[in-house]
Image 1 (tube, one colour):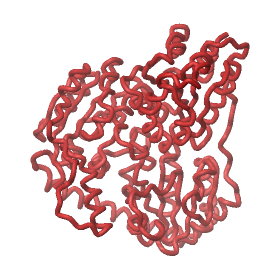
Image 2: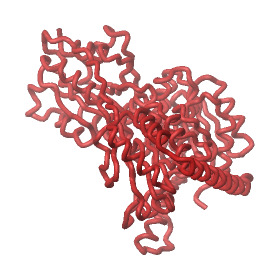
Image 3: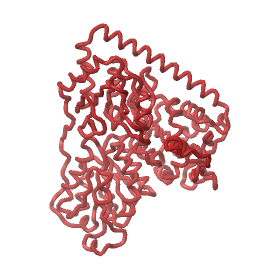
Image 4: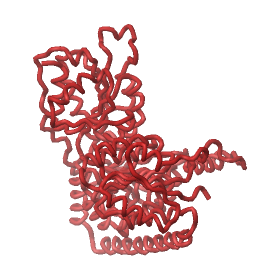
Length: 554
């Protein structure tokens, strides 16, 4: 058989149902093989970055390894930004790219380059198949490494001549791997002892809790110890019910701001995340002075990676949380229980007061024109079906988004990790393919949307039930905020305008762009029109775009 047959058989053996790609000449062997493998569907995109973004979110929503097909050096280059985001999101992916014929690579043919070297910095493993005889082993290893915690993308370069070489080696089936260990009892005992001695514990939770379905276990532990639960500054999932009295907001992006948010915590429990992704340097620790630190992870790499901890435990998060809870129940006294209950009561009162303060601010902004961000999010939440999946890349509206939408931990939320913009529209494609038939709400700013606007064509091609909401303030608002912070932090006080951060001229017409790619759209500039427009868009059952004129930086 030929190398391309081994490749396709490997995909089938690993349960692959979709290839996300943008076709090119060196991918001819793969494309020509699709007809012989009807169980593998090719999802066509108009740009490699969109294909990778869709695959990344597909991997997260389907909880399986995604496959991407890119085109030689420029195509891989177009996708590298999204591969970086996938790496930060721990999305398991096998990214491939066609390579020119190895017999002429030394002559540097058109579009050729060292693809494995290009991809190496943003992947867990990067290689090129040297002969058809090793195709089976390379593909088996690629899927194995992508699925090893912490999950992430790997890259395989596929030379066109190798794809056509003959080999007697057929695809290797995936191994029955049980990767996640049970937690060390001694580590659990030490962690429990620290929790029992804490008078003001706090929890910071990452995406891994949602990915592994352990939200209820975390809720149980948080209530047991009476601790507020904070989210990472950038989160891709909802790992704790947002309406819960112990739930707090996302942490800031500098060490001092994080420490201020954690307040008087004398113990911080980190669960399943990178902790912390900073934007601005600030001297000192993100932990309050004297606070002890416990970290629970499902793999060793993130454990104590950036910050030292007092106790770190590797193990299945569900098993670690259950074991920790069990030790606390076995050895606590009535006074400890009473103190934890009192903390829960105080935290619930603080949450209620915070919600009321936000509601007061929302009411003050309710009738502003253009539409205020608090009202936009409230109207979106009111009109979105309860079973809809939410892809969010609203960036500067994220605070209002979090206040308006409630997530119970069922993994309806898919946010953008990594910080690279343009993930929302592309990601909505992957989420919709992963969970066919489910309505999807995609919320994106206008600047972010222009990075992957070609995703609308793919949504129309496959008739995906996605409502794309583009928030149009005609500016890079987040950059204006960050310029303000920069000027303050670096004592660069200035009354200068915001350079190159306005997008008003010429104005971008998202309704017109959508129509040109087969997606019907409507433009909204009055608050009272929004909920009805969103309801109608969902009722259509297909892709729709709603362009919403919102207020700019005030």
